[in-house]
Length: 450
Figure (cartoon, helix red, strand yellow):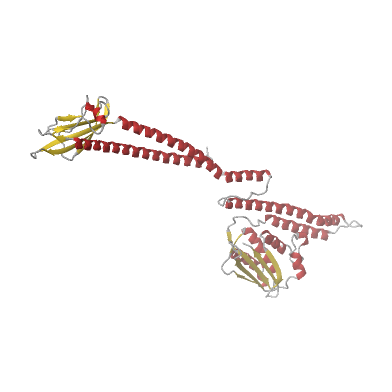
């Protein structure tokens, strides 16, 4: 089963969060335990120093400690704090009253200034003992070795660590649950624009709306903008098909009526085959024109750049063979080798109709100029075609540039070629101008935006 984006993010973030808090808890637990153990060792050392401060030698060079010590637990049996002093032979010279019934593991030989920690069990109780070696000189300067040992019950330490651990993991567990809930809410809020996109796409599919709305986060603007451009392109294509079918139906009415009259004959019962043939040719031209309009792709989002000079060069080479007997010269100028984002088929159709129309009327020369137009972030395109023919009268040029010109009313003498060119230019939101060129004939200039 494929997990949703929300579940993937929630699962991944939850694993990271739980792992991080787990490692944090482990580190805090270890740090607290080490700190508590160090504090215990420091306390044991402090008790040793307190015993040393209270100890003294009598006249017989025997070690004596007072009955009342700074910590009263030394005088209470089973209090959890125990003290003992041994001489160099290991014999006990003093022990606290709290040590009643217990024995401390005292090292036999411990150098002066040395210390030793010894964990041990006594009567089922866990203890930690610290032994510290000293050398005491009597009145005659004779060195007397002693070992001071202090032990403390580990149960309070373990209870303290257990209590801290319980509180730590309780708080971390609660924090984990709270953070997971907050994290889930944040993820749900963050992914709300994606759910909005999905909902609006369902509305587009059901026909409730035509495009996605606005107000999306910056990261989604390229996505929603691209979808809207695709939707607009699809709608424009649908409109082209609908308008083409309407124009086709309207354009065929007149030639069909004339054809019906020609086949029906006049008052003497004779038909007009020549008129019928002309109307059939006219209908074929209309159908061809509408099919070419329907096949025109128009501006499509995310179209790849097309090398324009290569397309015009290919068409020019083909027409050069077609009009070879007339000795036409077709010159192509493409400074910078411009490219343009368009459908290659549309550019082929544009180049074919432009050059074919120019070659039909040219006497000896046709010049084509292709230039890039820096009109936006994406370069536009300038196409200029000049010929040395008779040119196009201004009245015919005006009719040709009328928006919505149909095939049945195409400019006489120039067929459907320039009408198709005009439709392609309109599909790319470009401009088309027809005027007198420097070669004496017509100049057709097209500007396509980026």
